[in-house]
Length: 95
View 1 (cartoon, rainbow, N blue to C red):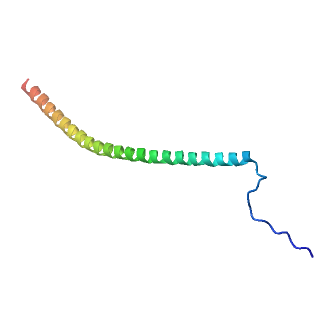
View 2: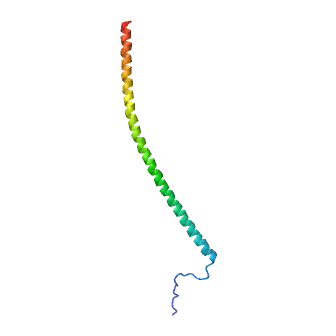
View 3: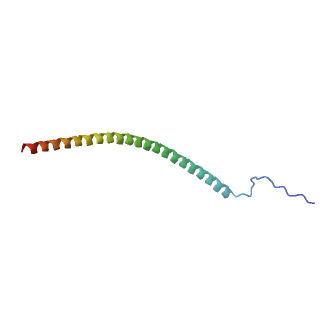
């Protein structure tokens, strides 16, 4: 019986062209650059999101304050209408 062929472990030898190695190294470098850029973009977006959340919270508090002010204005207008109606009624009686 013949012995089965042993598979040799992977290794580099002179049969791999330099151009192939150069392309693989260039791809690895570009991939690393792309990942770094992507990470920077994510960090930038996180910072911008944090700023936007702060602005939204400020706008919510301002909207609540404006709602209270609007309620007071409406109450004041209602009181002015009542006073005007009283004046009209009083003027009509005096005629």
